[in-house]
Image (tube, rainbow, N blue to C red; front, side):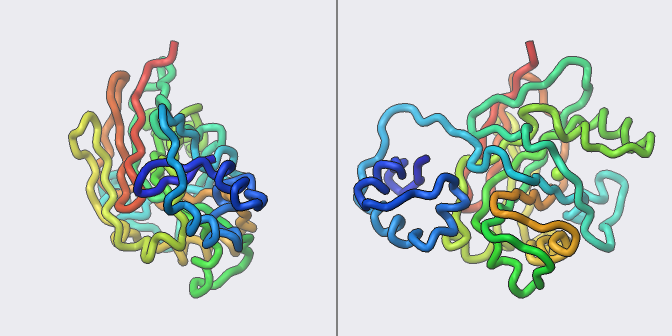
Length: 269
Ligand code: MG
């Protein structure tokens, strides 16, 4: 596990050894650790890693990967819908998750595949029946997310009144990263530019201020239904501008302050 600093990446295990402290095993646990400020203070001047860095998703196997449908007006409209009157939640298999620079692999015969730029929220503290006013206290941090969707499969399933879980859950259809930005580092998650580019061309460009249901509303409503646990990931929906990707493309999701999540697209086999 490493931490991103202004100067590069610092090996957190080595840093914890020099501090003679036990390092929590997960980024979300580090983000909510009472020792976080001690770790942050020690990052200044710590030696940075040299050589190639391999990125994994900052949360590799969340207990739940909860996603929002139609949470930006202009995206709802481009799908021929309107904004929902209450948050719509769906799920994606946690085995979809891949890290920065890992390839999105498109299986043969599934038709159109679309990327969706989203802000992901990582839960740090158990939440059940929480109020909007205290919801953000349960957040460990934030990351860029790409809710890759097999659009033709989704249309077929929803047209037949079936769940659209399958269309969201192909392996590699969940890039997350490049890293987790702790909640303490992000003053306000509701004023961030969000953008998706394919081969450098801008496809989606919006701002998290445009969400229909903001993050406290999403967490509060979800936590009435299900217990949100540390490490759970919530994808907060995508803005307008969805369009297909193809093998050979390079997709970037960039959320202001959260880095640029880049993934090449390959054909399976
Ligand atoms: Mg989505």
